[in-house]
Image 1 (cartoon, helix red, strand yellow):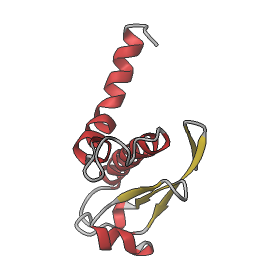
Image 2: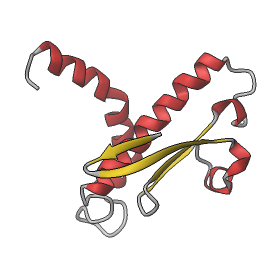
Image 3: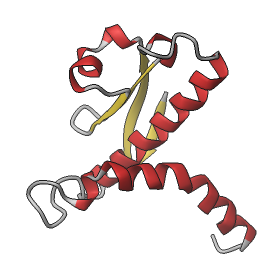
Length: 118
């Protein structure tokens, strides 16, 4: 699948946990590669610790991961990935902030629609 991020096409690819060494090496379930323009995420049914989760639960988790990584892509394509005022630990790389945007955006979008302010 492809998604356009501020004029740049990113591919979104789903991998088994064992397909990408980055998942285990970095202890992650997804990542955004702004050089290769890829959002990679784990098929949660193959993620350690999720063996007993339902398929529906795994799909919901995958959607959260994809949203999170797309937020990283938007920040990177905006020029905010690493040049946000600090050489290390900039606000734009803060995982908590990225999670907040990824988790709350659909609620914000709904409110914007309800307020007819788009």
